[in-house]
Length: 159
Image (tube, rainbow, N blue to C red; front, side, top):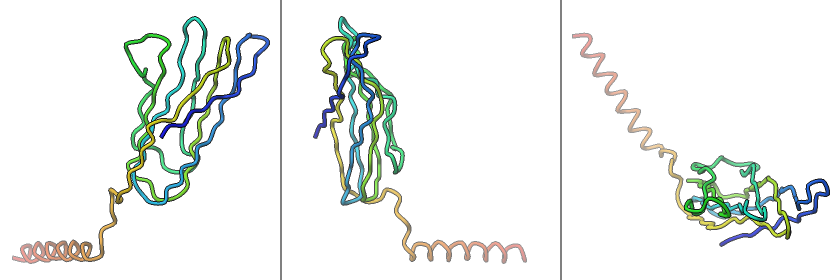
C-alpha cells in the first residue's frame, strides 16, 4: 500500500518559487498487536527546475519511538541530483490501538507547482509480544531455585 501526498503550493512573491509548509497526519488503526514497517520518500530534484520536499520531522504524536529509523538516503545513490530520498521506520512491536503519525516539513517548486512525498511499503505483521511477561509458574520455579541456592550456601558456610 502506498499513500501519495501533494502539498498545496502558493507562489512566494519575494522568491518567485512555489512554497508550502507541510503538516500532515496519518492515522494507523491496529486491531491486533504486531510489527509495523514503512518508508517515507521525498521528492529531491535540485536540477534545472527546483522541485523538492524537505521533511524535517516524522514521528508518532503519541506512542513509542520506532525500534529502527534509518537516515535519509538517496533512493538510488548512483544519481547525484534529481533522485528521491528515502527513510525507513520500523516498530518491532506495537500494541493494538490507534496511532497518529505526524509529518512536518516544507515543499518548494521553482516552476510548475507539482511536488510530492510518499508513504510506501506499509507492512504490518500481526504477532506476539517479543518480550512476554513470564507466567507465574516460571516465577515460582525461579524463586524456588534461588532459595535452594541460598540455603545450600548457608549450610556450606556453617561447616
